[in-house]
Amino acid sequence: MTAQRGPAGRDEPTPAALRAATARGLQEQFPGIRVWYGESTGSWWAMVPLRTGPRLLEAPTPQELREEIMSLRRRA
Image (cartoon, rainbow, N blue to C red; front, side):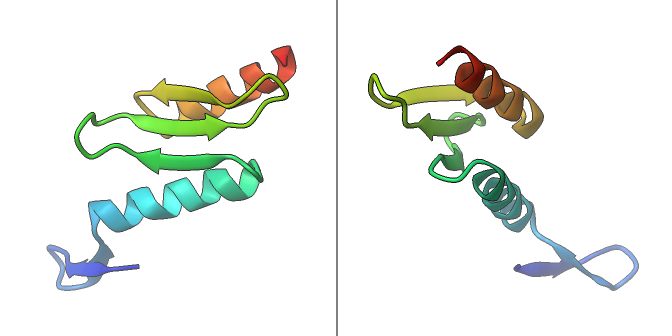
């Protein structure tokens, strides 16, 4: 993870590094699903493979994206 100096002089992860770690965590939780943060959109995205073809999901937060993925998998 990339770090930057925090107010107390300690190294803290950058926002980009935190987003990358969050995306990796979701991908580990949902193998086969690609997750990323859209820098231009400010949204969280996931490409979910389904029997009927891939489905693109968008959510404002990683938690909401996780819920969307779980909901889609229950319905599929």
